[in-house]
Length: 349
Ligand code: NAP
Ligand code: 3JN
Image 1 (cartoon, rainbow, N blue to C red):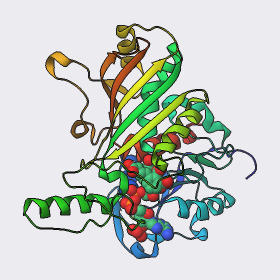
Image 2 (cartoon, protein in one colour):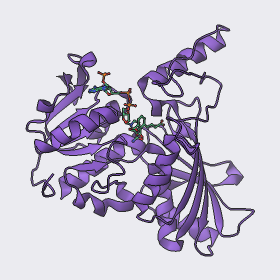
Image 3 (cartoon, protein in one colour):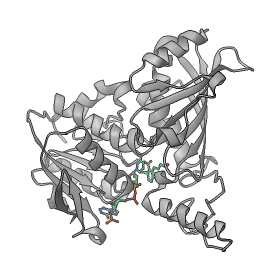
Image 4 (cartoon, rainbow, N blue to C red):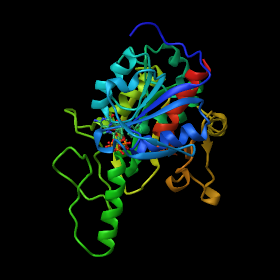
């Protein structure tokens, strides 16, 4: 892996691996919207989509099959093609001199790999050895809101329940949700095909349903998605003592993850000060006015880069605890925007 890479360039050769997917599409949108200084852009996918043409900044680019040789001359590679692809190709890309920003769980818990949410731990980017991991979407939006509270009061315990959009499970899950909804409304029967986990044989309907399983079950009775929230939160916050427990649920929303979060602080707090801290926190927008029924909602967060926080209230059973409702676009702050933010930090160094 060698020395941390420096990025003394003005324009970069960028590769997007998984460019035809739900996250990849948003990565291209973010690179364009942010006017990222690109010299040459490579769009990579599996052999299935090779040859497909995608538009970027008014130009048609041909998608290529991702191979180790694809990364010759690449400065920054954004990966979102699943853990197996990252495990195979990220080391090959690093060997060829690319800095990889990986959206999968493949390297997140590797102690040698920084796990970065820029609003929380941007300083970790400098420690990279060629790989920077992008956390799970549900973790990202939660830690952005927790960070200002942690810095002011300390956090002892977090209990979170998620309400996750189907786009988190990829482009096929979105199509499947729309198909099931149409069939159900037409009074037709249908066979569920994608959720909760495409690679497992048992499937459940998502239309008009809530599925309390995201990713595979672990031996402890929690799902992998839930354990990602537990372990990644501790790593990003840099504090193993924070106790975290999660329940992750898939709901038939297309875009925007919502979370009900119970936060036990280490000291007493003032609710107005909490609102003030959150209002000033980078990347956070407070939407909290019960009198006018104002609170964050997935439909309003979709397409936005920020994390929205509302329903801010003291817990009724523990005066040192808060309850929050946290909403963000899972494909943007939860994936593509966080990755492009990291790329911007690399380019600025
Ligand atoms: P998706 O819509 O199913 O897209 C998958 C993408 O990966 C497609 O571009 C696909 O190309 C490509 N791909 C599949 N197999 C490949 C291979 N062998 N070699 C090269 N490319 C391959 O999925 P998605 O929602 O975009 O998610 C993709 C991955 O991103 C997930 O598996 C996950 O690891 C990560 N992700 C992270 C977050 C997060 O929380 N940060 C959120 C969602 C997803 P084809 O068009 O050729 O099939
Ligand atoms: O389901 C969601 O809402 C988020 C899904 C993320 C995801 C999907 C497939 C594989 C991940 C991830 O980022 O944790 C992975 C993975 O890389 O493990």
